Image (cartoon, rainbow, N blue to C red):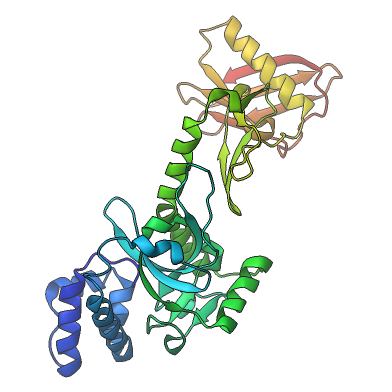
Length: 362
């Protein structure tokens, strides 16, 4: 049960009594909660799930005092181990499978490990054909767990709270193969939504890691950096830690950025946008036109691959008409006061020889 707002102690107390007396009525607050929480709904509907959850909770409770603070011995963490870890400002906890030996992503960074989050008692409809589901008798948690290999990420060793056991070598070998091969599969809409939710939630798991990384980079002396300037070509920034890459879009036609020299663990890099002569020329001419006449109710924006947005500040619809020197033309009507123009726009000219631009309000 990875995420639930209902008090766990209260839930376990009711389930324990309900297992002994099945005819016992469900409290109104729990019934109302179960209408919105599919996990609790399953616990109330399926006896074997309720028994497994109560057993699991009692096993956890025995170690509550010992695991209330992060273990100083967390450096002993290693691949194939199952741990409980904390995350977020409220110190929530969850379970993970460690997939790497401890490492340092930066000389000023605390030890980190890579993990695959574990989802307890997953819904069968949320499991893909290539997913690894470990049955209750094959793992230390005592309930079926889904290994989220598609959500692998780093966390700091200091986030590790409680060691729960070692996965069998044959099972962990399956996990390693899955991580290396990154199998492409067709998945259902239900699985897509589930994975998006879990990956977004996983961002909280790694937040401390990336915060430390950002702080460590800020402390490095300026002479260890080099500067890079772009006039429309430098569009994306990548931050790499281990094998995980975070991508940040850098909007705007031009900017300066600082790149770290001689860093093996943290890599700042940039992609080159595909050149398009027409879009490049159109952007330059629109900027010049709007600078020349500041009263025109239009603004122009440029993003990756020279894609443009021409926006009417009053959100009034308009027609953009362009005449080329060769005699051809390009017309586009706005939608809700915005024209989106990119390399895939129908009828886009290949030349940069623009003769006339007309903006006509409808």
